[in-house]
Length: 254
Image (cartoon, rainbow, N blue to C red):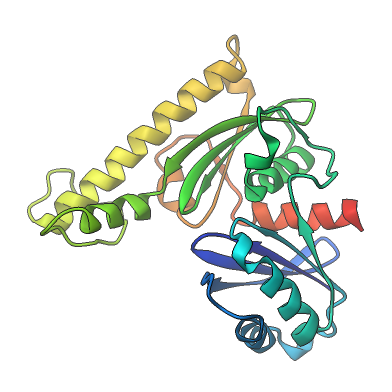
């Protein structure tokens, strides 16, 4: 039994693997101030007895303040060591970028998973706190990509930087021409964000394969992927891509 932990800016996504099978997933809110004991109590409560003894754990984190607490919590409360994946980990993915240390580990894990499980050249669009585009060559090279603020972040920014606008849920509105403030914000965030995704993706595919952009696979993942992929044509949605990347990383590093 393997526990994979994707430690993101908004959520910690957890997955229980038995071999290649993803048996169960959970989410915890990310809080950089939480202690190892607080995290451990939550993990212990989530891990059901029917899954049996945990054999190992692997995590990738974009919140460095939580790394030590994660490792301690898993060891003390679930009885297994937790291995960290970083940009230095030898995963068979060459980071062809100017500064490898600046590449978020979630992006590296997405690149590994898409290359090993879906083939390349490919682009992964990850709809998280930030929306990232990650490009992988046919040779398994991580080429870089683009970073956009996520739609929830955009909606929150409107509230935080204006006097009267509320924070609204990100959703597809019934119409573009809103009849009240909530509808107006939802229309602007949803369709404006959709337009950004379409344009960045179009230019990304053109740059990766000028002669045949359609030869590049496009995989979507992340919490809001389902809300937008229905509008983006033939894009495959893989909700657990980052967790699968952690499982594959564990196989390589074990």
